[in-house]
Length: 188
Image 1 (tube, rainbow, N blue to C red):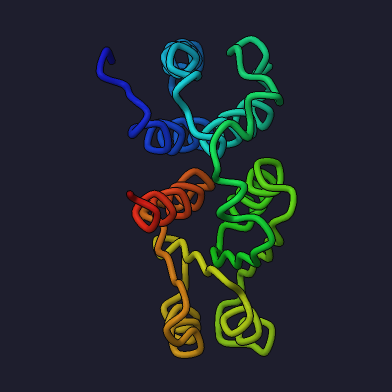
Image 2 (cartoon, rainbow, N blue to C red):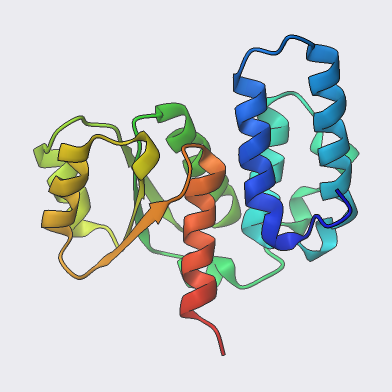
């Protein structure tokens, strides 16, 4: 609606992801709603963070909507210091929805080329999951799309290093967890 703002972008993208991945009794009505949502996003694009822009571009590409029609171009990504804060760090993502993890990985690597992102979807603790838990700078778990035993295993091996929990299942939620972490950690 009229109140769509920067703080609601990741939520909006999560809703779009859910709509597009679910069956619809009226696909034309769904498309019309999604185009109205994207038009609202295009109206505030100048105020979006680099990670939000990367997420919008990624979602647009995934569903075949040209991001240039939204007024979002590659040169807009990098307008804030998110790349500086996340640059040269190793990020691990755990989610059983491997498509969401891959989307988040691509969006992060687009926004921050120097970041190293590893994804995992093991159902139980494994040596690879242990290595990610111990060696990554930041670990993000999509708890709504995770196995309890693997989540506990990660927590056990993570220690006091940064562990973030995404609120939803989609790639937008994974990105939002990172952005919220940096926004809270770097407030003046």
